[in-house]
Length: 259
Image (cartoon, rainbow, N blue to C red):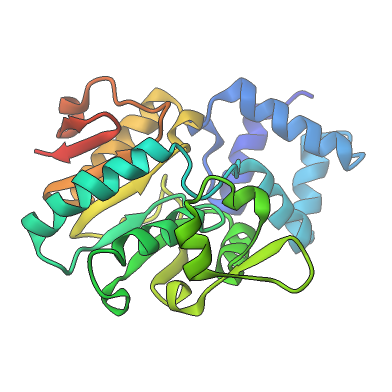
C-alpha cells in the first residue's frame, strides 16, 4: 500500500499516536494486515472509516499496542524485586512508596506488584498508578478476570490468597482488595505528561517496539519522573545500552537507579 507517510500524519491528527516513533517495518506490516482483514483498499479509505466508526478506531489502537502479558513473567526478576529492590526502596523512602506501572497492558503487572508489596506493608497502604495507551486493555485490567494461561507462572500462594474461580469457566477473578490498590489511567508515553515523584517505575516489554530516538526521550522522561535514587525496572530484552546518557546507573540486571 502506498502513502504510508501521509497515513502516519493522519493517524497522529486523529489519535495523537506518533507512528514514526515505532519501528517501521514491524508496525507497517501489522497495520497492513489489519486493513486487508477489513477488506479496505487504501490508507485514505481506512482513515476515513476509523474517523467515523468508534469501534473500528478502538480496534486499531488495540492492534497497534502489542499486548502480551502474564503474571510473574521472568520469575527470577520478580524474586530479585521482592528480595532486594523492595527492601532497598523501603529503607530509602520509607513505607509510602509511589510506584508507576507504565504500559501496564491487562493489569497483570500492577496487580503482581500489589501482591508482592503486601508481604511488606499492609495492603490498604499500597497504591500503584497503572497506565496504558489502549483503552480496551485498561477495561480488561479493571475487570480483573484472567485465564489459567495468564496465571501459570504465578506462585500458588498468590493464586490461593487473591483469586477465586470465575464460575465454571477456566478463568479466575482477582480479589477486590488487590483491585482497589491500583489506579488505572489512559496514557501515551510519547506525548502525555508523566507522573512525578515516583520511587519506582516498572516498564517492561514495550520499549522494544520503539525507535532508538523515541527510547532516549522516554528514558529521560522516566528519569525526570523519579525521585533521586529511585528505580526503573525494565524487561528482560531491554537493557539500556548507555544508562548514564539518560541519568541512570545500572543497579542490577534490568534495574536502573536514578543518579
